[in-house]
Length: 524
View 1 (cartoon, helix red, strand yellow):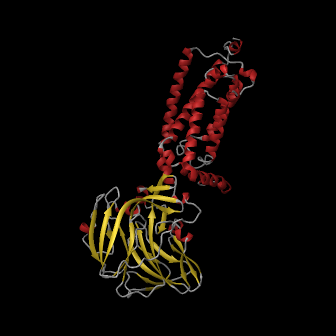
View 2 (cartoon, one colour):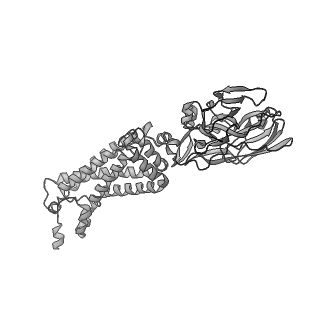
View 3 (cartoon, one colour):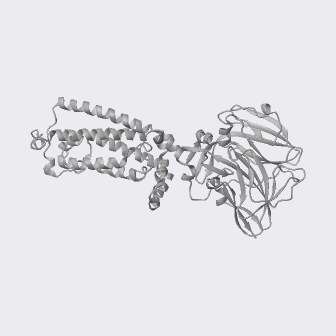
C-alpha cells in the first residue's frame, strides 16, 4: 500500500491544463506520424524510395556531394531492407506518440530519424521536399520533438500516457520514459474531469480535420505526387560508375544464308533489358533484346518471315526493306498468335524494322525495333571491320529501384531521358569497338528514333565514304558529319591511319550527353 500511495495523484494544481494540452499535442503529432507510417506501406513509396534520394541530391552544393553519394550507394543495392526499416521506425514512433509509450526514447529516436530524413530524402529542405517523400517537413518534426522534450522536462509524468500506468508497477521504466528530474516526476497533476476531456477531444478532432485537409492538398500537388517523383528520376541518375556488364555485340553478323531464300523468325516478348550500367527497363522486344537481332541478307534474296506474338497485347512487324501490302503483312497479331509472309530484298542498304501497332510511337520507344542489312548484288569495297549501330531513345519513369518503365507523356513531348547506340547508354565507351591502323571500318547506321535525327560523326577523323542507300555507285566522300532521319539508315566507311581512341557520336551534343557516344579503339 505504501508503494501505491507513493503514486497517488496529488491535489489538482494550475499545471493540470498544461499537462492535458501537452498530452493532446503529443497525440495530434502521433496522428501525423501514423499517417506518415501508413503512406510508407503504399507501393508508390517503395517504388520510388531510391528516387527520393536522387532527387534530393539535385542542385546541392558540391561539398555535400559525398553525403548524398554515400547514402545512394548504401541504399540502392539494399532498397528493400531500408524500405522496411523506414516503415518499422515510423510505425513505432507513431505508436509511441499516440500511446505515450517510452516517451523519452520515442522523442530522441524521432528527432534523430527526422534529422536523417531532412538531410537525405529531403535534401536539407532543398528542391524536393513536401509531398514527394511522404515524410513531411522533417526539420519541423525535429523542432517539435525538441519542444516535447523541453515541455516534459518541466511537467514530469503525464497521466495521459501508457508510461504512467507502467511506472506504477515497474518504477524502473522511468529510465526510458521520463525526461524530468526525480522530484519533478513525483508531482503528477490530476486528470481533467471527463467533461473537460471530451471538450478537448472535440477540439482535437476539428484540428485533425483541418490538418488532414492541408496534408491531402500537399500530397496531391502536381510536384509532390509519386508519379512526379518517378518521372523526375532518370536512368542516368541511377546508373552505376562500373562498366556496362553485358554490352550489345555491334558486329555485323554473317549472311543468314547463301541460297535464294532465307528464314527469319521473330518473337514479340515483354522483357526487362539493360539501358545503362546497373539500370534496367521493362520493355517490349523482338527476341528479347533491344535492338532486335541484326538481320543480314543479300540483295535479291527472298526473306521468309514468321512473326510470333508472345507478349501481352497486339503487336506487328514492319520491314523498311520490304515492298509488300502492309494491310496483309504488317497487320496486328494478337497475343498468342503468329503470322508468316515473304518479301524480296530488292534494294540494298541499312534498313529499320519495327512494330507498327498503334500508337507506333509507344511501341518503337518501348524497344520494338531492329536493323536489317541488305548487301548490294555488286559488292561494296571490302571492309576490315563491320559494325551495326542503331540509335534509339528511352522515355522513362521509375518503376521500382533501378528498374524503369515507359513514360508516354515524355514520348509525346519528345523529351527522352536517354539517346543510345544499340540500346544501352555509353556501352561502347566502357567497351570500345576495335580496329587496326589503315583498316576500312564500316558502320551500318540506322536511326530507329522514334523522334530525333542522328548526326553521325567520328571525332578525330573524316567519314571516308558514305553510301546513302547501299548502292556502290551512289557515294559521298570526305564528310565531317552525316545526318540520318528517324526510320532511315546509311552505310558509312571510316579509315584511320593513326593509332588512338576515336569517339563516334550523335553530334547533337544533347544526345551525346544522354548516352549516344561510343569509342573506336585503333591499334597498330
